[in-house]
Each structure stands twice: as structure tokens, then as C-alpha cells.
Image (cartoon, each protein chain N blue to C red):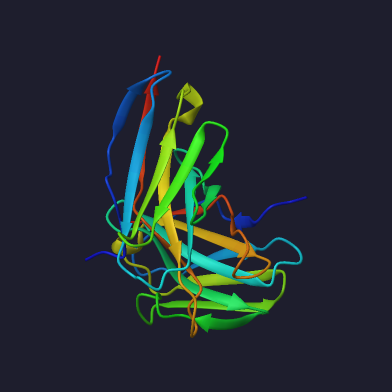
Length: 113
Length: 112
């Protein structure tokens, strides 16, 4: 079975540009999570969805960040405008339920210059 | 105080050595505990859950001390392939919570 799929795997963009990260969760998983990982702060939860509905977005750093989940098989994380401090690895994860294991995608390595 | 704290390491050990990692958490309401493993430039993957009575999976043993809010991971007979970063993870329930809180990880390097 395919795991969590993320695209692109690498993104290099200039400050001020819009960035869109994409995620396809594992089929049948009702929960989808977006994380950001940096050396300084480690792995942080940004937002998570249950059945396509955002449940907790308290980790979203500021209004420049937005996430959507239009259907059960697709989610986006958008940064507009991007800033150099947004450079990080962004992971998407999914799980059947909060009590079950979260499976992570390979991540998107974002560099904002 | 950070929610989950770990010694960042690195721990540099020879093959065959026994190595132990420790982790403390601040939220006494935390209910589930895990160790994840993350290889260099890869995604985190679940290594094992941590149960109240302690649990073992091959060369790996996890312990939980709720009174001290402390979790440990012991690796016996370490292999080169054990080289990775080990993330301590806690989960609390209630309200809109239920997400995982990750420690920053402890880096292990096993040398020949």
C-alpha cells in the first residue's frame, strides 16, 4: 500500500513568493496532521484535521500560513508570502484515529531565500 | 519548562554497547508515550509504544515512571543500523488535543 505522499520533495523559492505544499494521506485514515521540523524547535504540530475538518490550528505560526483539506485524499499547506524563517522540513502525517500510530510522509524540504 | 525534554547527544558508542536515553515530560495529564526513530533526512517512524509496566521489543526496552514523569529507552547490543535520532513523544487527551508532542531527539551514532 502507498504511504503518505507529499509533493514537492524539495522547494526553493524567494522571499515573498507563495508556496503550496501538498499531501495525500493513507486511504482510510480519518486524521491528517501537518508538522514543521527545524533544528532550533524540533518537530512541531501546525494543524490537524479530522474527516476533512480542521480541529486544532493553534500551532499555525501566523496568518501567512493556511491549510485546507477539500476531500479525504488531499490537503494543502500554503504560505503566502513566504519568509526565510519559514525554511524547514514540512511533514504530513495521517492516522486512523488519534489513538493509533501516525504515519509520516517523506516531507517537503523548503528553502526560502 | 519545555513539554518534552531530551538530552540531544550525540551518543557515540561502539557496536555491541548498551546505551540508554532518557526523557522527561511536564504535563502530568499525558496519557500515551512513544519512542520514534528518525534517520538522517527521513521521516519519523514509530519504534515502540511505552507501557506503564515497561515493555521490551527485541534489543529495545522502554520504561515509564509516571511519578517522576520520566521515560527511558534502552538499546542492548547496539548495531550500526541503530544510528539515528530517537524522539521521545507524549500524547495528552481532552478538548481538541490529542496531538503528539515531540522531544527534539537524541542522536545516536554506533561506530564499528
